[in-house]
Amino acid sequence: MQRKQGIIELGRRLVEHGPKRTLEAARRVRAIHNHTVITDTTKGVYVWEHDFYPAIYIPQKDLINSKLSDKEEIRVEGKGLASLAELIVSAHDGLEEVKIDNVLRFDNDKKLGALAGLLRIEFGSVGMNVERG
Image (tube, rainbow, N blue to C red; front, top):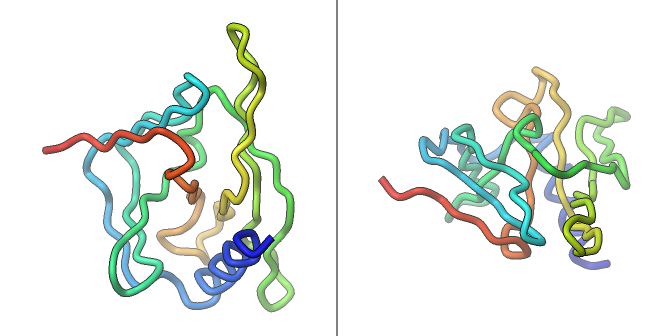
């Protein structure tokens, strides 16, 4: 519950104040969960949520072999521009369906600037590759 609340607060702060900095990743980002590729993109974005180091966000449109389910709208000044979501990887090849909680999803709204249409997935809970240059 504490982790969920932290993600909601992060989403609220990013909607209100924006990130400290963003930078296109310029590298291929591939995430695998439950033996399934859930994203394979060259459009990742480094987002500095805090001053010290970035997190990698991915475009929602680059999700594959999975689906998102919004769990809680994150409202700022009466408007919902982000949601706490869960990513569902379907059952396949004898493997059961799995869910990734605490996904932060930003609406595809110009008001959000560089965050529009992006997802924050806790990549520590999935396998991830970032190509080296």
